[in-house]
Image 1 (spheres, helix red, strand yellow):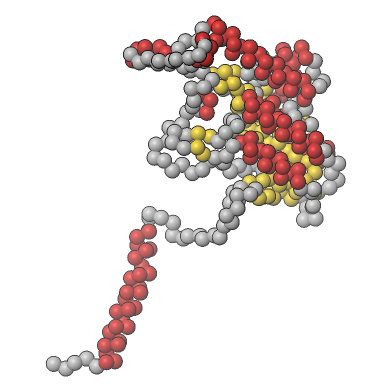
Image 2 (cartoon, rainbow, N blue to C red):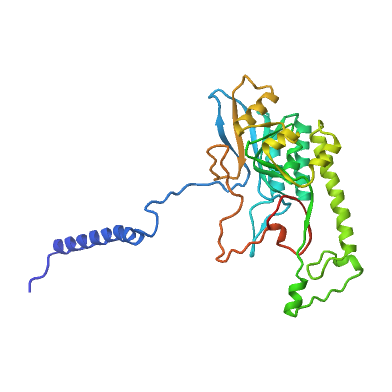
Length: 346
């Protein structure tokens, strides 16, 4: 039998290599069709976690002065959010301070707008954020406008009282001036299950507020005294922020109810109704920039997409655990929580 020539063998090897190359190009397409995106984007990213400035709007290409939009969003707590298996997101108080510090350090930022969309939260978290706004104003002399969105109640309104001007969207719900302590009582359920908690304590009130026994009158009196003191502090904050309201009028308004924005305006709890555009315009006026063009900026972690000032990027990490059973933050622990919070359903 006649043997193949060297040129023939080279030709066969070349054809085989071309077939292998073609198969290598086709099989990923066949594998991914209908199961995954048909294209992939690889983008170099920075390893820094420092806040970056995002331009949300620019009134003119020649604009240099800035208005900083700073977000107050969700339930306020001086801790990272907890889930069943992990902690996620950032500490809202720490992030808020970081944004204020960034705005304070930029000489081109002439005013700040607090976009508040929060039902409130922890007493201490609310008070810390309120104090940070006062510190920002004291150190920079830059005016602050509070722009109330869907809900700016209890602790959200508490923070707004630190602003020089409070403007609410016409459909905002605000107010809820007051304090609440929520502590569950599992004692009846435990009795039905035949489960008992053995508590060894140094004094009678050491386990006051425990979910493992009913609250007695002595416990209740202790907690009521604390609630009353925190309530008095809230009233002082409102009085400082709304000097045109008499203390007796504030106490009458501060029965815990929420107010629809037009009613809040009529009651003197806010200064005006309007949109975020009008909040920016108010900030420009207070900063002496009525006839000037400005840039509206916001601060966020790298890779967040903020096309305009209504956009919001969640501070929580992607959900990775299969079972995601989360309780509201004010119910996630056995410790009683003191809250400047509007929480009619929990």
